[in-house]
Image (cartoon, rainbow, N blue to C red; front, side, top):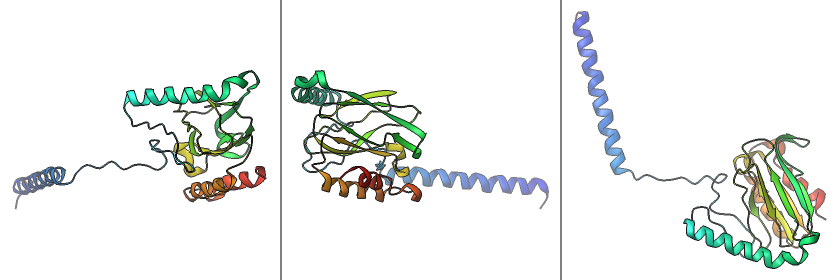
Length: 216
């Protein structure tokens, strides 16, 4: 077989393989239905809460439904907090790539505030958010949605566990105590669930250590 015959044969075989590949790909697209996998740490459609579930904001809902929910949330907060508005304080929590406690942290990671105080989450370093993981009964979940700053008012007493969705596997999370720790036992269980998903061994018990140190 000379060079010309070899090249002709080679190109013919490659062409046949390409045709077979496209036929298989086309058939696969018809037969196999497309699926969407939900990522535990980036899907904010569902917020885990301590029972009962109470009100939830579903980011996947229609625009009209979302607007209705926001109005409802604002009404609840106004009714609970307006009487004490003069005495309310706004605290600051920073979202950091590197802090005094190590990489990927909220600072402070634990904060104790009064009922109807607010927290302004500041994205000091880019790429972070703060999302409710677990909270007291009848409280309102929050999600800062990667905004540079986002202020949340806390009108329900108890402990709150929240995380940075893209860095939860690195234990980037925090605990908020609003006045008291009436849901202490439930929060222990929620922290255990959260830490089961932490992949970085050196910081795997960061939240449980924080809980033991601050919650008496």
